[in-house]
Length: 471
Image (cartoon, rainbow, N blue to C red):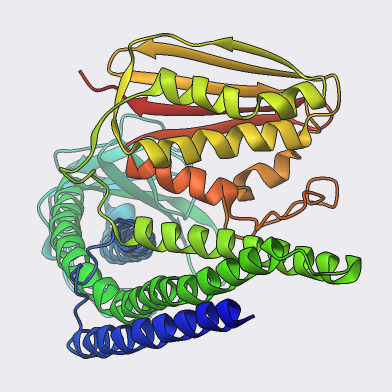
């Protein structure tokens, strides 16, 4: 009992010591965060936030491209409509003026180029000679009531028969308007038709210049918007990243802080178990405390590992060493051999020798240990677990396949999330914290690798880990 108190006092003392150091470290962290910097990372130095910032920027640019594209299209069509409306108005004015020459041309074909005197007949039409209204590139044609050509003036004429439609229409680069000529407003007897045409080359050139201007303006706008968007997304993500770093630091500090009292509790439990003067109920209570302490210790170690992996850079530090991946797998098979035999599971291992991976042996053992334990946990009695290893180029791929209960297709993207649990069939594991696959993914990424999974309910799952080979 005296030794128990001694160990408990030692644990409390260690806890207070670590607490004081943690407070000092937290104060330093808070000062650094107030200045907008993390002790290990600068703003948006985390690959996760850089990728998020890039996705936000691309989404913003895509939205702006759509908006600017729609706006430019609207401006172009409105401008084109205005130009052609202006052109049609000029054609209508010219046609009204040329209509006064129809009777004279019917009487004398040579009167096409004769300028009619300006006589106000009070009929509501223009009395200005058409020669005074015609512009360069315009042409006029006069037809009788039977649509026979009487005369024409100009250079460009549409190569098609007369269409007695009051609406303007366009053929190639010539825009044409045809109006009927009546004897009087009351009789409404058709005397003939006047067709006026104009070249649309200048209008098309103007529209091309507008397109070029909109294109250059759009590119310049996208460059400015891209720079501004990157600055805005960085500014917007700075508070989020700072909060994330604070949460990382809190998780690491809290996990480190909890290790001391857990160590003291574990030591005390071991001391109590070594004493034989306990009845059956006390032994059962101590076993419950030991199980809970072991689970909490495992959870704290998982949280500390994830916090460190989040804070670490993507590349391995220089302290990483070459590790024989085949030895790690064989050691894990030996460790889990009793469980494999107990569940009568068939294990097939196709492991190549002399394949080295640069990294940390303990983390790689944790990675494949978690995958093998999952396969054992969810594979029924008499099932099959198969380990395959193959090397291609500068990578080695290790696959662990089982004939277990499988994972639903909609759950596969979520299985690497922390503390995520599937349905009751997959969460029946005792003592699990829901961090196993998250740790597997974190270790894989820390070692510069990739992990993927394929699964089907009732058939089984296959996890593939791809790691760079040390040569």
